[in-house]
Length: 144
Image (cartoon, rainbow, N blue to C red):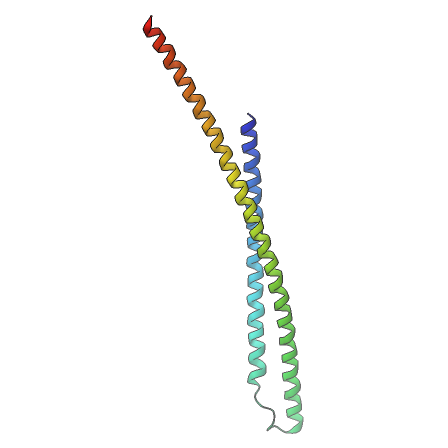
């Protein structure tokens, strides 16, 4: 009875840890998608300021305007790089949390398996003992 209660509790804990791991995996997947979006936006911004061409051959007003445009796009790209770096640091923290949750789940799963094996071994020993007692009784009856 006590072993069944322990196994049920351990099963519940393993299920809870599974849910935690799945939640962290989905959060990490969402963060990876966001990182990819950051990277694509950064690539587009880089392409924008690189493709605007040289400004030295343009008239003064147009060259100033083009230079201001390039500086604004480069500043925005720098801002995105900072945001991307911060996001990647957040992802690293999330990965560590996922690894820790996975390890906890594995430990609990192993404890559950050992407990189940222990209960199965105890039941097998009890069944063997019953068979041995029945065989002994039959042998004694055959001797009379």
